[in-house]
Length: 573
Image 1: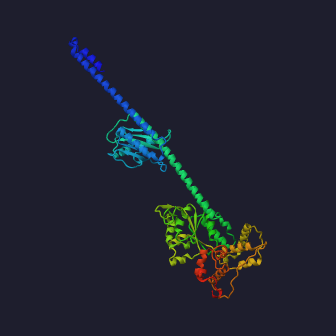
Image 2 (image 1 turned 45 degrees about the vertical axis):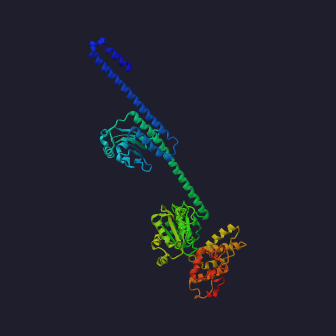
């Protein structure tokens, strides 16, 4: 170019052409100007080509970072890419929004990069602020706004929002995978001035939007997979816990078939149980020890909508007072000395099912408030944790105590009592439906003779009459134990039963049930050499739990072997 100019200069400035100097001087200057302009155009073109190459190189390099990128690093890499593009193109802000799976009608901004000199919200619903733009994006269109006056009249809300955030010019690209329905948007905007958006830049934005959409879809799939795996693991653990519980509590399925009897009083109880079973109401079952309160609770659960889940049982009387809270509500690791691992409580295990609280009257007063909260709000905290756990559990409680008297004495909360007593069921003692005793005898005889491999098919009439006349302080449980003992000692086909003897004496000696019960317990203790626990111990023979027998002995003033020695003269009783 320089050589061409020098030749032209020589040609038009030679002395031979001096007469035409002015005309040739003008032509020379025009040629110089054209040459310089062409040089500037070429340089500009080279510059633009270099910038485009650098931009495409940036997109290629940043896109390569997302290949095989772990899901937990995707969000950070997206924000880094937004920052790099904004810095390269001298832009002020980049936002990425997604449609939440829980709220398909909204579009929330999840990744935002903005220059420190500008302001932007941490998150917002783009559908509320930019309805026209969002509609366009979700239909698959790219929105290019060089200046706000380009917005149509129906985009009034969008124009206001862009002005609110100081946006002067913006490009909005949809996020979609494989031409599918868009699930988000990607924006790049300028706040300082209006700007033209060349086609190469817009296509670059669309390319990076495709990359973002692909990795976000992969992240969503990964999170969904982890969620499903967590649910499967949770169900697996739930099944394992329930299987363990089932092994500990044999025959937890519809045990109402074991409620044997045809008396009117028993039919009335079963009718009540069937009616309340279809509701979600709390049930309070009362009655003497051994009357079958647990069987009634299982019958209610079996006929309820929760019957597909295991019935969880808690014996409040047998749990140590120091551990009952963690057994009911669970504990975190390190909640107290010796708590070496996290423990799921019975209430959490019973979520979606029914929990049976046996001997509810033995629950310590300090835990009654926590139980009341579960009944009222369906929530509690594990021991050692402030996190609230919400559950859906139906509560059935049982007791042989007079809770009304306990309320008067202040040992049982009145509000908890009425919360439990939504639907009360009182199970009668065996002496009030003696007509069911023959059916119960044959049911127990069939059960135990089958287990022991014996063929016993006859019960003497006199024996049956004696069984029907006996008072049965231990109720059905005591009858069951006596028949089991009878099957053990019987050698032939005729059942040999050692029917408990009625205590002789005049009316004054038999004036109260308490006195009769006291004498019967002492006689049983004499038979077992005052051994209370274990097989064939006094509690076993009476059909009582050891804790219940200890409580009765204390109430009736009967000393233990340690307190008074083994030999008690019945005449002094």
